[in-house]
Length: 480
Image 1 (tube, helix red, strand yellow):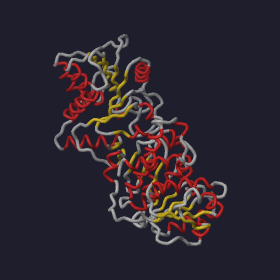
Image 2: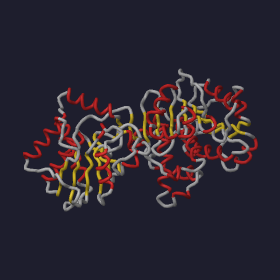
Image 3: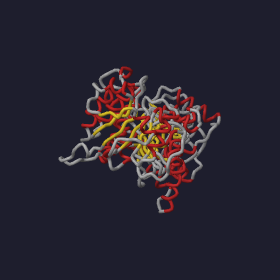
Image 4: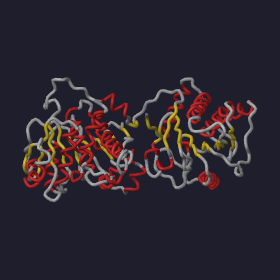
C-alpha cells in the first residue's frame, strides 16, 4: 500500500479529472468505499453522526451518510463549519436532499454510538480556528466510537504536527496512507489504519512494506547451493569494553543465512565470544587493519560500527572500506558526519536511531520525529546512501527518492543491542540478495516481526536483544 503527500493526492485528482473521471465520480467512489468499510465496525441499531466540513472531505462524508441512510442505518449528517463550498460536495449534498434526506442542525445534545469525522482532510492548515478546535474537543469528549475520514481532523497530511486533533479509533484513508500516519505525534491520533480505493491506479514513490512484499521478494536458491552462494560477510565490531555488540550482530548475520562470517575485532573480544559463535572466523585488530587497507578476501558485504568508539582510527577504517565496492552497513560508532562516494555500484546503508540521525543532519530529535520520511529521504538522495531510520515505523529511504515504511515491531525492541542484531541481519541479506532494496526492507521487516512474535507469549519488557537471533529462524520459516 502506497503512502502519499498532500501534493501527490492533488496531482492524482487533477490527472483523473483530466482523463475524464470527474471529482463528482471520485467523491461517489470514496463515499461508497467508506460505507463498505465502515459497516464492519458498526451495528445496524447504532446511532451514527457524520460531521462534514465544507470541502471534499466533507463531501465524502455526505456520500457516506447517503449510503448509510439508504441501507437502513440511523445516521445524522451535520455541517458544524457551514454548508459545503466545493462544487462536488455541493452536487452530492443536493442529491442527498433530493433523495429525501435532511441535515441535522442540532446534534450536541444527542447521544451517538459512532461519530464520523469528515471535517478537514488533507487540506488542513495550522493554526486551527477556534470553532474547529471546539468541535474537535467536543468529539474527543464523547463516549463514542470515532472514525476519521482520510486523516483525523487537526492532523496535517505530511508532517507529525498535531497540537490538537480528533482522537480516532479508526482512520479510513482514501486511495492510500498519508505520511502523518507514520510520524510523531500525529500517528497516535489515527487509531487503526485502514485504506479504501476510489478506482484509481495505486502507485507512488513510497509504500508500506508488507508480508506480501516480503514473500514476493524472498530469494529462492537451488538445492545445490553452498556457503559461497550465500556470501562472505566481514563484521568489524566490538571493543574490549563492549564485546556483546559484536556477538549480537554476528548471531544476527549467521541466523539470517550468511554463508561465512569473518569478525574483525580485538583478541580479547574474540576470546570472549568464540565459544558462543563457533561458526565465525576472526581477523584480529580488524579496525586497525581496515585503516591500512587490509581486508579478508572475497567479501560480499562489510558491516562496521557496533561496539566501536568513533574517532580518527574508526574514520580511517571507514574511508578505506568505502573505497571498496562491496555493500556496506554503517551503524553505531560508524555513524558520523562525512561525505560519501557517489559512483559506487553497491549500496551504503546507514542505520541510525533518531538521536544518531539528529547529529548527522544537525536537527533536534523532535523535528526528526515529525518529519522522519522527508528528513531521511532528503539525506539519502543528497548523500547517495540508504537510510534506515529506526524507531516506530522504521523509515527506509533510498537514494533514488523512493522508500518504504516498516509496519512491524514494538517497544520490546527498545533495548540496547537490538540495533546490533539488525545490522547483522541487513548485512546477511545484502550478501546474497540480488535485489538490494528488498534485502534491506526484508531485514527490517523480519527484525520487527521477531519482536511481534515474542510479545504474543511473553512480556513486552522482558525481551532482550539476544532473543532476536533466537526467534529469527522461526520467523524466516514463514517465508521459505
